[in-house]
Amino acid sequence: MTRRVQTRSVLCLGVAPVLLALWSSISFCSPQLQPGQRGPAAQYVAGTAPSAGSWSRPSRPMSQMLALPATQEADISAASRETDAAVVLLLHPGTGSPGFAELPHMGSALTGASPGWAEAAEQLVKRVNWDLGNEAVEFRSMSVAELCQADSSVRFEFILGVDLVEEPPQECAATMQQILSQTTSRMFITSSKARTTCSFWSSKTSLSGVGDEELSNPGFMGLQAAFGGYQEAAKMRNDVVNLWHRRTAEEAVYAILVLIDSAVTGLPAMEAQRPVPTSETIGRAIDRCQDAFRNCFTQPRCLQSLACLSQCGLADQSCSYRCIVSYQSQAFTDFSLCALQKQNLLNSQIERLPTPRAKPMETFRGESMTHETAENILVGHFEPNDHPHSWLVAAGSNPAYEQFALQYQLWYKGSGRNTFWYHPTFLVEALDGAKIWRTRDYRVRRRETPGMWDFSVVDNGIISEERWHLLGADDNLEWCVLFYVGVARKAGLSYRGCLVLTPEGQMPGPEHAEAITAAIARADMKPWELEATSNPPVDPANPPPLIAPETQEPAPLLRVSAAA
Image 1 (tube, one colour):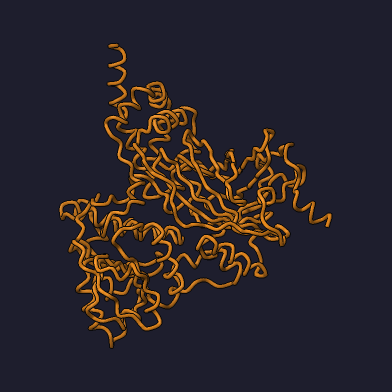
Image 2 (tube, rainbow, N blue to C red):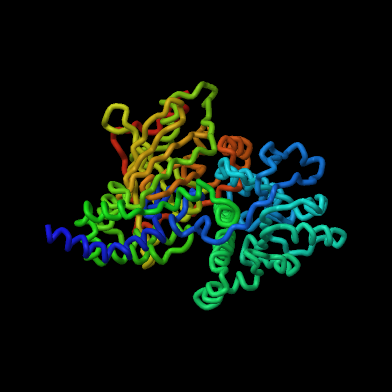
């Protein structure tokens, strides 16, 4: 008994740095391809986002009706008419494109064009509203020209201006000045590092009464901001700016959610990703996982992994996963499995995201979709000798996933009755520069609706559960579109993403634009939200460890097509 008490005391002394590492980066609990998430935005590092309530939120005024151009009147939702909703405005230039449109994406591959600010802002509003739930907050977007036409008495709780590189028209300067002066909080940033906010706008920044210069320069180790009482406001601004400057649509969405959750009202979807351990969950994990704690504390690679994770910043899934693959060990997996998964050390209560309600395709080659046909589409181009994979990822919406090159996808029937498996193989660059192939093994179970499945995997000791949807596929299997929503319940992570797959990872041609756009729209998304993945030539000295299950018939749909 005495030995047990002493052991627990030692473990208590050591659990603090472990919790710190976990708290600052929980992304090792990967669903599909990386610990932390298989991919989604709304899936980011637990505990690193600005906490709701961490800095003083202004009281929310009564929202007033916006005086918009007549063409927009019909678009105002019933929710926007509620008088108790805090109105948050995304103010954009109305011309040009956001930074994330500058990178290769599915939209540019299909049409050669990128979204302008008006189109991008409209979609960002839709995406943000997925996670606002029933909170009394309304998120809208307007261009500078549209705001100039609004009634000067309109009031906003928060205005986020992005890419405002020019002053407003002279004729509406007074109206703009009045609108800004009666807005509780204002922040003006750019969507890429290469752009600069016009001084007219940057001078109007105000968070907790602090201006842009102070917020962007918090002093050595943040001491100036700390002594000035605006440390959390400065951190929130820095987090939002960094997310936008990563130039992905998904992280732009998350940046806006961070802002609303921190500065306007707490969002349940965000709070669920910040689980709070209790003395009971910590004590239970220490008592029941003593061997796992001890092994991790005494093995350099496990400690290196935790120390590396603690250095990863906000939502930096790329950093987190490279830590794991660089220092991966059985001790780390055992610790995660026991302390997090079995004992729920983090006290996580998160659930799978309910939105959007993606709609799987109903027909294929002119006939109603069946379970067998849907699974054969996933099996795709598999040939055990010449093509030991189903598909490669050409583009995807989740930046945490798209960082990996050469994402081979394999679906196959197992040896057991009605068993179906998903086996991705992907290339990761470790911290020391080594290029390492990683694989995962998911169990796939049919849902009632053909083209919908439940995927599950144990990755680095954490169970991830995902719901996948088949949104579309070419009759000749030149492309396939999938959407997934997942959760790692004991790690406080939820995520979502959309993928376009092709036989060799090449981007589809413009002749497929209409069909692929329609398939992606089944998840209320746009092609330009999916960034291109990297599919370089395979190094002959480091080939992928692909498998060729004997239980799977080669490319069943291609054989049927050839026979016809």
